[in-house]
Length: 394
Image (cartoon, rainbow, N blue to C red; front, side):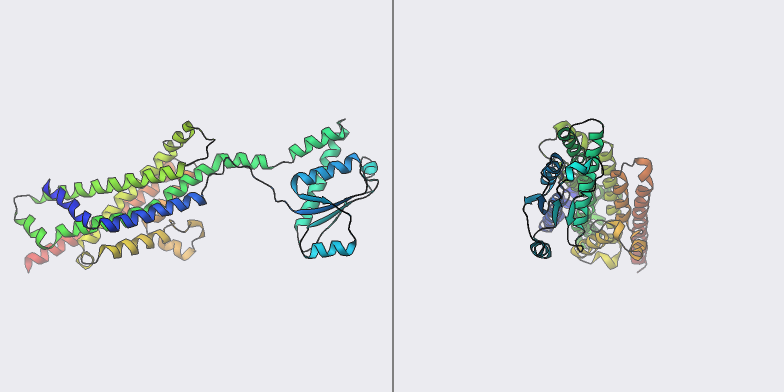
């Protein structure tokens, strides 16, 4: 037990650096909350533009068109000369000048010869989109009127059916909270790498060299018992780090707007997707511990400051492995290198999990991560054995 307490005393010496990296991780997740904000309670909105309308017809049909445009855009009813229209379009004070000719309503149901004229700048495609909006509206109104509906009833039904924003808001409700949780979990490896290297690496190295190692060697404590206590200390700290980061990511990832019930939030936290993400984090934590063991047992690395590994490995693995830069925008050459890093397979697993994957879809990612960790562990043990034999011979 004394060795266990000594392990944490060594960690305590680096407490400031550990808290700094933990604070950086918290800051990343907080900023991430803004990027992956839950917009499920918000209604999508169509782009609104400044439009001038000149209605020469003043019929039921023309007034219905003007009301429809007002429901989307900022419409002013003015009569302007051609040179005024050109100036307004050139300086982008308006995007369209719409003329509804006299007799539009009379010919709408028959020949349709008196068509609405939309004047816009050809260099601004938004004018074309407004023409399409008008055409879609008029075609739908004509269809309703032909079935016997009144113009007012047809106008109301068409306005409701053409309002695509309600369908967009439904999609946002179903997907945004999942994306936010995914973003929170995908950033966890940076915190695990930096915090654990900053804490565990100096502690493990301290027991493997110098006066501490000599005192333990000549004591009555067996090598097996010594390793068990060091292992328990490392496991305890790794569990604390893992639990803290997972809780933080879960809170940030499940923060939703006020209209979402508590039952929905708790279901999101402990559903199958959350548990798979948690297992993925646990595997990555084990791999990180194995990697630390390798560096601590190699003499060329054991004398280096922990901050070097924490910074270089933490940032390097995060940038190359899909933590800071999404995997789908990494170059092909970078991806070839990234496949040899555990972060790449961690990020791949997170993407599959939050895309609806099951354990059958991510087992290969977990296995590759563990394989990377075992290789590191065996390299460290082999180097430690060779170094000890050389010391005995010397």
